[in-house]
Amino acid sequence: MARFEIVNRIARYNTTFMGAEPDLEPGFLGWIELIRPNGDPAGYIYLEDKAKGSRLGGVGRFDPPYVVMSRPIREAALLFTVLDSNRPLQLRYHGEEERGGSTFLEEDFTTQTEEIRQDIESEVGRALFTR
Image (cartoon, rainbow, N blue to C red):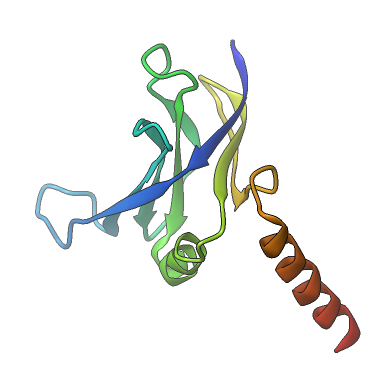
């Protein structure tokens, strides 16, 4: 079994909403396609009533492979807030190809500008001192 430690930077995203199609699994809303700066897929976030585990896709076709994760529909607003934040983002995967693994959508601190870094530090400072 191959073990993967993948970090895919995200440049933009597209959405596809399916609605209540008769051939689809009940409770499946659609997906968010995350796209790397070079145009290759970074990953997909499926929006469904009951979230499932993460896995890899495009193994052997994309280097590194893309990541497929699932989130409950109730988290869609939060996901779009993060995606529309204008902050550099990445999708990080730790796990195996066959068994799946853990996936994280997070800020990409390696590409942040000094202005964004100061903004984050100021927000963190305010949160610490206002409690």
